[in-house]
Image (cartoon, rainbow, N blue to C red):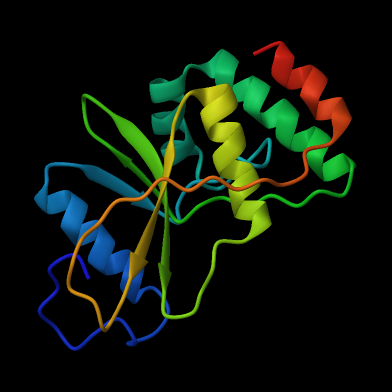
Length: 156
């Protein structure tokens, strides 16, 4: 569980994100946790969205938001991940799961669009009360993207 020595991940909502924040901060990263919203045109998190915009470029971010708009208008749901992790050299989005929580399709759609349009990869952190080992694994999952969005994606 990312070298946590405390009572475990079953402490409730937000604990996994907190542990993950500490882990990446100790490695020299900055973290934005649940305080960004790239899915709407306006957001109360403008300040943090602007940081992400600096990393991606405004043109790419506008393309991303256009793609999100198409998804929403065609009844496809999409969700922001838990975290944006960055330093001067790299950045990525992150979703934290624990216990029996699983990655949902709306979260996968965000990850797909972030990689395809913004050029930012996403990672899934799974925290366990029972395992103390770290391992990395690539995940390949198929899900629906509307045809109208495929045309938009070809222009990226």
